[in-house]
Structures are given as C-alpha cells and as structure tokens.
Image (cartoon, rainbow, N blue to C red; front, side):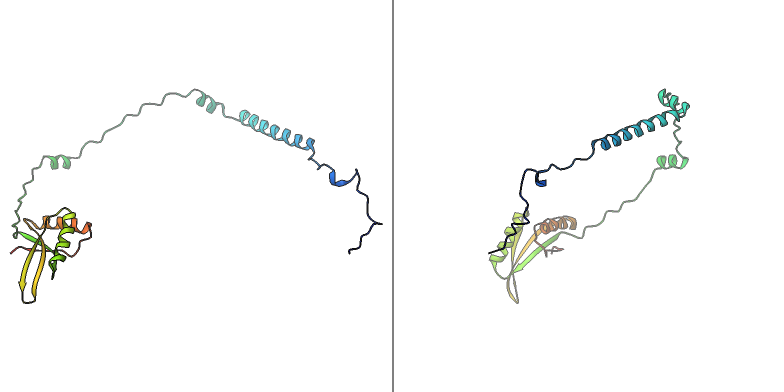
Length: 175
C-alpha cells in the first residue's frame, strides 16, 4: 500500500485557486488602441484632402466631353485595284482516270471467316462481296468492295472501315 503524507496535506476549501476565473485583457488598453486607429484614419483622410491639387479635383468633379477624333480611312493602294480588275486565264487539264478500282479487305481459306468479315463491313454501312478463287494453293475466299470510279472514293470507304477497326484493306486497279 502506498504511503500518504497527511501532515503536509493542505485542506481543500473555498479559497482554492482551482476555481478562480481567468484574467481578461485590460479593457482600457483595447480602448486606447481603437482610438489610435480611428484617429490615424481620420488624419490620413484630412491630409489627402488638404494636399490635393485643386485643378485636378475640379477636372474630376466636372468632366468635359472629349473632343471628337476624326477617323481617316486609308486609301486603297493602286496595285490592289489592278489585281481586282485583272482577269486570270488558267488552263485546267482534266486528269485521265486510270480506270475502276476495287478494294480487297481479306482473303480466307474458309467461307465462314469470309462471311464474318463481310458482316463486320455491313455493320460499317458498306456492301461487300465474296469471290471464290481457285489457285495452285487451293480455294481462297476474297472479301472485296467496289468497283469504284475514282481512287478517292475507295480511300473514303477505306477510312470508314478504319474507324470501325477493320484495317489491312488494299486498293487495286480492277481487272
């Protein structure tokens, strides 16, 4: 059991410092600081007013209408007038088309694989056909689109197929 010091123990009573209220800041000091701040602000306003330029104050109090500024439009240079009036004659050559084009997107050993690619192309909004080719290596099923009159039309359809992740199509002259 722990030893207790009953001799030096001070009795707990009403005058204990535990219940004493906390000291508050001195209210007169706060009042003096507030008076100094208000006085400093008032002095600053008085100083600005007494040292202002009277001409500038009058000008700001009664603003006058700004003088009209005449806009001068620059004249058109002579060479521009000559260019506008000049007629240009250009010879346009018609490019000869190299013939119809066909686009082949796949060549498969089985008809089912070719049908699968043809369905994917149909979902892209294009019409394709399956051609059966006999060769020395056996039967091949080729998925083709076309014929196209110009190579530009074939390239346009090729880009549509690329957007739906069908790549590897080749464009050739149709024979």
